[in-house]
Structures are given as C-alpha cells and as structure tokens.
Length: 303
Image (cartoon, rainbow, N blue to C red; front, side, top):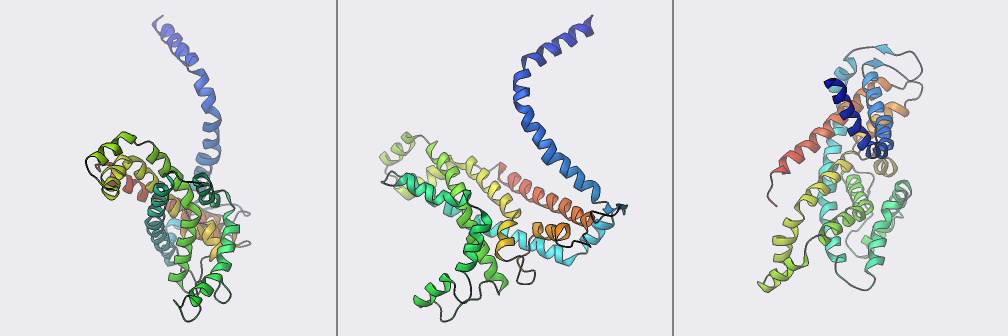
C-alpha cells in the first residue's frame, strides 16, 4: 500500500508539472538531436579509420596518437589561442564604450544603435568579401586612404603576411560582433539604479570615477558573462577566417575549426573523417577547458 501511495504521489507531482515539461520538450529534443547525438556520433568515429564511404575500420587510439604528433594542428591551436585573446581584448572595450555612449539620451540614439547592430544580422560571408576588397593590396580603399594621409608610402600586403592577416581578422570580428555585445552591455547599464549615480554626484564624483567605482563593479556579473561568451566565440572562429584568408598565407591564420573542416570536406576521395572526428573531440575539450578556467578564475572576484 505504501508503494502504491508513493507511486500515486509521484504521478500526482508529475501531472502537476506536466505543462512545464511539455513546454520544455521541444528544446530538449533539439538539444538531443543537434547537440548530444552529433557529439556521440563524432566521438564514436574518432576511434575508426573512416572516409565517409568505405566501411569503418576500428583503430583504437591511433587517431589521437597521430593528432598529438601533428605539428600543423598544434599550429592551428596556437593561432586559435591568439585570436581568442586578441579579439576579446579589442571587442569588449569597444562594445562597452559604445554602450556607455549610446546609453546617453541624444537625437538619433535609436538609429545609431540600429546601425551598429546591423552587422549581426548580415551574412558573414558577404561582409568578409567586402572587407577583403577594402584591404586589397593594390586597389583597396584602406591602403588608398593611408597613402593619401601620408601614414604609409606604399601599399601594405595585408593578406601576404601572417601578422597583418590576423590584424584584419581581429578588426573584422570586432566590427561584425561589437553590436551584439553592445546590446548586452546596454541591458546591464540600464539595470543600474539611477539613484546610485545621483548619490555619487552629490558626493562630488566625476564621470571617470563614477564609471570605474560604480558602473564597472555593479555590472560585474554581466561583464563576466559577456567576456566568457566573447572568448568562446573567438575560439570557435570559422566563417570569417574561411572567407577572408582561407587559413593563409601558408597556415598562419588557420584555426582549429578550419583544420577540422579540411579533413571532413576538403579531401574528398581521400577524406579522413575518423581523424577529423578525433580533432573535433580534442578541440572541443580544449575550448571547454579554457572557458572553465576563465570562469573559475573570475568566480571569486569581488565586483
């Protein structure tokens, strides 16, 4: 009788929360179908020699052994880490500055916000092509402007040098993503009570003191979240690098996602999807480790 009563109680509670579970079920199903299942699929094939057509041959840890000896892959990891540091260092301050400026009331405020946000709803490939022609070595508008201003004497080979190509990628990612983070910062700024600023003004604090002593500390948790999101997105770069440099010159701008792509799709006929799966798993672990390391390092920070 006790078991029956317990079952009835469980069924009653299940019935009580049936509606929330039903509402969550489409999202849970999508996560399973497009998140969990592909991950398990890739993990399974990382232990096989597989080209996508022939029968898979189990090779154990051979793909991972090969991966740890693959100098080109580790070069792509270094490139990814460089982007993962450089992009947030430029993107976050720019987004915060724009959010602070556009949080002020002035004529055309909404239009300015919309213009800055537009790149986030525009095709990355199209924007990257425009950027490519802007930074073209011989007839690009950027070189033309710099020469006319007297800042340089001859055209810069933006895509002929690894460092210069990385600078272009960082500039492109900053321009294309700054609007999204600006909106997040705006929401954080607008959640700060106005009476806090009024008290600071009464106490004689200027705008710089107010910004560093009140604004930054009070939006600390959102700042941490935005930075973590920016780092993760920078570590997952693909479309912008693919469209701008395709990993060149040489492999100087090739990132982990592009290296995975090459083995999955660009070696048709000799595709190595088993090896690409191993690269995917290790790259995912590296991105997760770096993100968790950042979260742990900033968890106990006092804002």
